Image 1 (cartoon, rainbow over the protein chains, first blue to last red):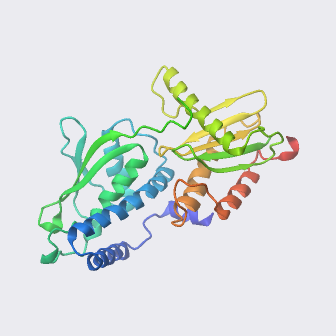
Image 2: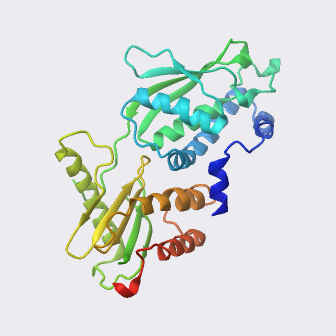
Length: 180
Length: 145
């Protein structure tokens, strides 16, 4: 039980530099293991997805947030609660599409990429692509299929880091076998 | 005052976990059949409840009671369903089910990378922790049953 009490009182105890460096080591290793950047991007997304499908349970348990009414509420929860809880930053939500099914998260600074400079031979590497996978996996578990990708990345010379999220559809619940 | 049994279903309707305490009479069908029956009933009652609701609901279906027992239901936004049957003296077990989810299930099952998701649990740790938690509940007392 003691484990629970200190995790709620201080969720920021973990050294953020250690986290950043660990993530860096992970990406470096993937770059060594795979031939091209696209493959690394894909692996990062896949790892993120697997993190996301579990992380959502932790998120729901800790935040005690219920189901969102619409996509705008989802966007707010992601930016203000989820990013704050796990990365200690609050991205701004902007650039809504007219239909309200697409928005951007603008990250002023990206804790994953604190000490990073992309070498010239990795110009197509999406360094923080893990985040896309996490968001996709987590939202899939709350019945939302979304498309997530980096629109801008300050590592590649853009002014800010921008994650673009597009709502695809609600995932309907399976009807149990033998029911109609 | 007592707890009869507890089911945990995943979002696809398979039963991840079942345990019972002080359940004197069995349903007379196989456990698999019982799980299917239970999930089917929950699925229907949920859609019934939301269709009949005069306003949009947040939590929806919470519990029902018969002359002998009360069924408590808690569903997470991720579609996990926690179902506990108690006797009638337990009026609200929502906090209990929430506790089982956030402190036992998430910590011991979801955060354990070796436990595959969407498969019946065989985690001994989860089983024993849950058992001792249920036994420590103020309304768990088999003798009064």
